[in-house]
Structure formats: structure tokens, C-alpha cells
Amino acid sequence: MPPATLTSRVPPELFKREQGELHDDKAIGVDIVNCGLEEPIREVVQKTGHEGVLVVGRVRESKDENFGFHAGAGEFGDLVKAGGD
Image (tube, rainbow, N blue to C red):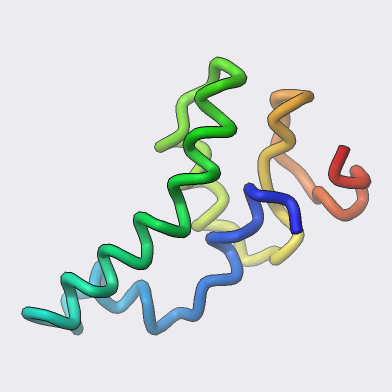
């Protein structure tokens, strides 16, 4: 699985924190899981000279499970069609 597609496959329950539906210990746990899932993407993207936070945000917003950031090409798109090069 290409790294930049990971956050688009996170179960929606994990994003309830942002919607204010989780509180206390559950919210902290969700934050930890989200950070752990996003960190590999940020690292790969930053090593190519792009802004990790912006890329993660755009990938998260996409409804397309194949959408991601091709770090080598510096482009967003369907990584399955691109072959995940």
C-alpha cells in the first residue's frame, strides 16, 4: 500500500475527535493513533521537499481510497493508476 493512501483508509470513527464527539481518554487515544498513522506520510513527503501537513490534509479530505501523493513526482492523484512508482 502506498504510504500516502493510509489516512484515507482510516475508519471514520477515528475522526470523531475532530467533530467533538469524543472526550477525555478516548480522545487522547484517537489523537495518538491518528498521529501514528500520519507520521510516515509526513516523513516521506518532507524528505522530498514538500510540506507534510498540507499533503496529509489533502489526502484525508479525499473520498477516493486510491488518492494520494506521489512523492517522487511531487503530484497528487490516483496512485493505483500511477503504479505506485
